[in-house]
Length: 410
Image 1 (cartoon, rainbow, N blue to C red):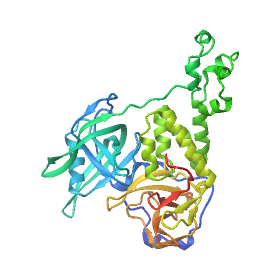
Image 2 (cartoon, rainbow, N blue to C red; image 1 turned 135 degrees about the vertical axis):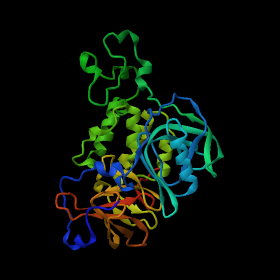
Image 3 (spheres, rainbow, N blue to C red; image 1 turned 90 degrees about the horizontal axis):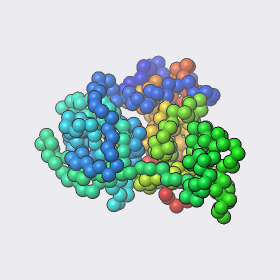
Image 4 (cartoon, helix red, strand yellow; image 1 turned 135 degrees about the horizontal axis):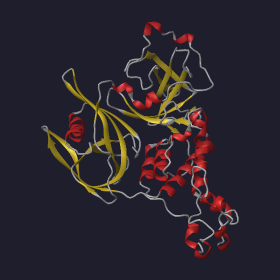
């Protein structure tokens, strides 16, 4: 998609970096308007299957660079015949317009997600069939067997037996030693609802974590395991990424929240694969918090090829309502997961600013490379519009940079 700014109107040298409150409409990137217009809505019921349901004949879309999550927006732009036909099968044949996003990041890992098409466009460009899709992840699935099937004279991958995986929130450890005789004056759970209300507020005569008196576990450990404390700690670590964007847009359901916060982590895909394999939302949140603490402790973003410092975790900002990271697709059908930052170092820019297929409408983009090894690591986004702040920001592709975490991968 082209922006409203023509190259003749664009004077890059006259633009300087601006700080302060972000005034850019951050809902635009989340809508993936760069995919074009004339999309057709895929009407149908919201996809939901019971846990342990077995699904058959669900088309599979292979993606080796990105890990998708339930609740995440998925943009797809396909020109390869097999991918186009798989998406067309999901659109025309599947009851819920469903398909499975299968990653190829770790051998023998068959945990994927089932996604639902929200809108689509089928076009023919210069004699080549193109399918553009806006979809959303729904549930985790386990693939037992994959076969090929002929559809419109093309072989497509098909899941013959896909099992919906269970997602749950484990109980607080103290619940297992709760004294039933005290239930009449104490609520049925020791966790505080993460949005700030506490059942214990109604019963001030009973101390929270009173069961800890019957264990040798220190209260500070129990406090860290408390679900409300866990989620509030995660929100505190991510709050600076959002500037003035209300963080209350995050999901209220604990499992959905664990998916959302794991999806916005600026970490390598193999770490996200390990988080996706976790069924317990509490365990996933504990691991997310551990990663966030290490990210802020080391506070380094480095080139994956030569390890030169190119940015800081503290400089991460959210230029999309979905969060500081996001998945975008280019005209070559290549998917990038990016993280947006307000400043960079040790990088070189190349080329003139371009507005075509810009992931951030009203911004033009330039290529960024590591100044030490020349590795392409991201893009610079720039706009001359004075009513938009920031006028300049940057995006790293997580395939080419990494945030330093000095710990074994989860």
